[in-house]
View: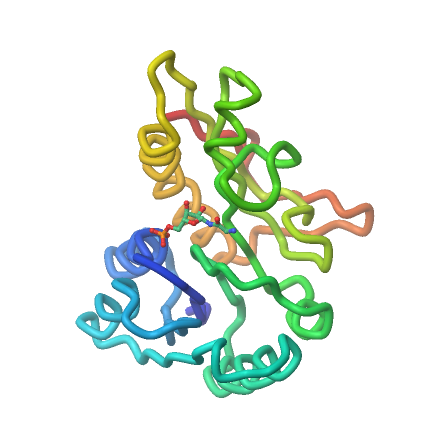
Length: 210
Ligand code: GAR
């Protein structure tokens, strides 16, 4: 079975969805560790209850991004993962870290990339008046939120939405998209082509609708 290390910074609901997919057999992988960039995240507490090894690497302990990323990478490598999955991991990773896991580092971002990279994506979407919004699972490259897209989930924007109500609708589709992509990765079906497009064996439609 494929080995995943998942990195979280917060509640870790995407991590939980992936762990549950692995536990139920929908995803033929094992989450071999959950690492957090700060203490007392709900995600790390929950992972421990599932008997998954957890580690906290507090980013505040490090003077530079490089120093933080080096220690993080050393810890990740002790688990020998096939893939490193970012699930609400709120640290920008250095080019050296991204290069170390080239083709094996995956992120979920709460917008339909290339629209709305960065932070506060739901407020950005409401401010622009877009009628569709969603999430993107993509390979991580050195340019933030710009890597090759594996799958997307789409939701409508409704008239009375707030950033919070829209975030909740997007999160629900995230919980469909990320475990499914994880299952494709586990089965070795996701290919990053030379032209930076992604192909997934046997999958015609990689757009998820709620
Ligand atoms: C998710 O909406 C995820 O897409 C987003 O943070 C949330 C984490 O929720 N990620 C980013 O904003 C990455 N820059 P979770 O901790 O419950 O999975």
